[in-house]
Image 1: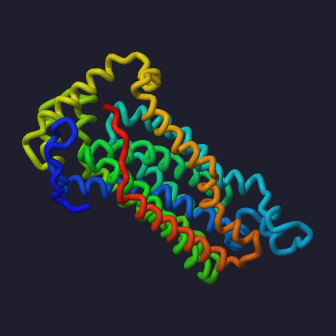
Image 2 (image 1 turned 90 degrees about the vertical axis):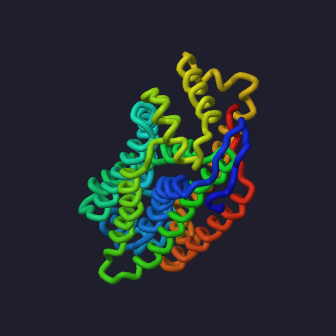
Image 3 (image 1 turned 30 degrees about the vertical axis):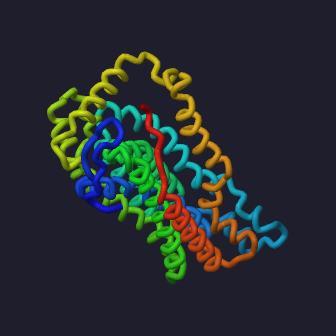
Length: 348
């Protein structure tokens, strides 16, 4: 995607170009995708490391090393281990509801900042965990970070991106997610070789790197024009910001559409039911059906538990982690191939 690419006379008579300001802002915000991807990749890896299991889940470790009467799959049958893995997603689900309100009331930037800080704290606590309680508390904080970042970052990217390239820019979030998964897989493969049995601490603690980048970057991110209109009704400030992100002074057509959309949204008493109207039905169906069926395929479970799955079929600790590296590489290649002609339906 070339910086400076002309997008004049696009939908609705919008003018502008792909500015370096938009590119840098979106790259910084898309780091939120790395957070989610890193956690997907890192958790399954550390739960396959014997020193980690020996310290926090001794029953699982004992069954792995001594009990030859049960299958490898059943050796990981532990309610505490399930609590460790699922606590992040439960916390993320609950946090996403609060994140929606925070994003609406205070803007996209504060919501991204909360996500970065929560993930930073969760990474630090997980790395320094001395018992199961602190370990799970760290996971909960990670879930809060994921909940806020996953809610606010895609929205920020969509609102900052030019109309024609909105889908491609938003796809950067998913590409970042793939980068996070692959990075976690590589780190797990390296840290499990560390002598002394503390490599899992490095794996959990390295999540602080993208979290720090997102947190510091959020301090310098600019709020999106539509957010300025919705929260403060400051049309002049929104116009100046729109001129900056589009690289042109001729933004009146887009500004008028944003103001009109904001005013219309305030008149809707039940905006959810508005989406069910016939003219919005195709967009609504696609926007819900695609992520729903993507989730029920179980691909996230495979990505999360990949190292454990590979271990249960007989691979060793190192081989199972290397196998997850291969799946991470394939995932990134698939994202790159799909991003060539990606588009995002936009409500007119």
